[in-house]
Length: 187
Image (cartoon, rainbow, N blue to C red; front, side):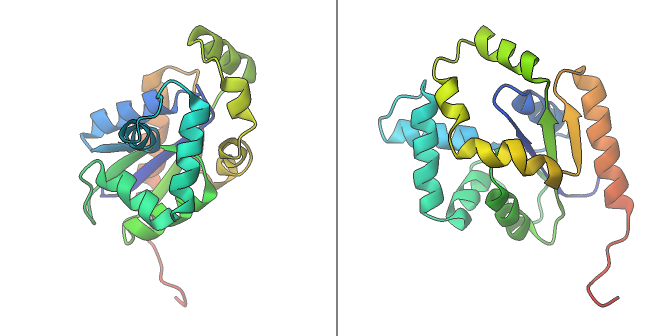
């Protein structure tokens, strides 16, 4: 596959991390994660890592420092260099999509959104015993991922389908777009 960057968004417990890591492994591409980066920053600050509320607050401070730095640091965490293919997990904001697209250019950036039936998602949340999830659902980090990102995505996949079927759908869609010629403005 031609070099590109593929990002994954989805609500809490949609399956986005499982899918993004499976794609990264299949393609043998590095994978970077907003969630892993935020957890690393929280750990460096001596904060608890088992509270989504704390992690969301850390994420907010990183956003306040500016999207360019935040996104650059997330990409750099994987060893990404310009021109390299990459998988990016855990995109939660429209501004992150915009900044990653600018940062990785001229490579193409594709957003894949992982959707899931709400009852299935709630069941996964209970199985994983996420104590503070009801507070996190109301947080600003969940607004874009619920409302805006699905419409920005190249593809919305079902997080309850078998991983091999989802991977095939994603890879087929990305390859099809990569094969289309791109035109400069004015052509």
